[in-house]
Length: 210
Image (cartoon, rainbow, N blue to C red):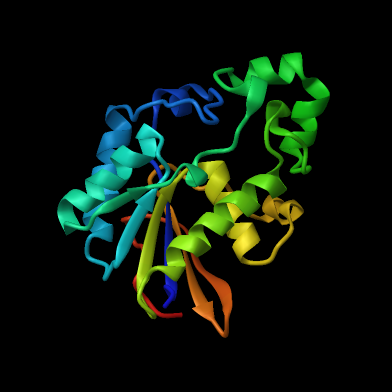
């Protein structure tokens, strides 16, 4: 038993996203825009043959996932291992504040170096945490099934890299996932292959075989 398709969905917009404020593991809710984004994406994703839905236990991910499970009737499993990066002292601060107070550390982080985010997790630690959690939930899905994971921008990007067997430095080739957008991975010959990245309701082909 294991899922053959992963849909990795970032939560909708929060006030911190709108302000360019670092959230990390602070429990920040969706704003009105984020709730509308989640509803629009959920209407699209509900047409997929989903077998299980799991989310980070932070409210912005839970509420995004609930927009979907309210349409599908699937149970929602919450998992703290799917939380956003532990960003240490950077949590709650504006990007400009971080750059001013920790110029060298912030510059290294912006370059994609595998440094501690505000003294918290490194990208490699984050990717390992998220990938292990995703694989654990995927293993509980019937063979050939589809697992949807609602989580966070940095967490999902790091997790995607780890699932693909890529180092954190490869992240410079990937944009960040936009709010309420998703990535799709399919298992091919025991390895995960990326089929969609930053997909959204308009023009997305998330259900297509590639």
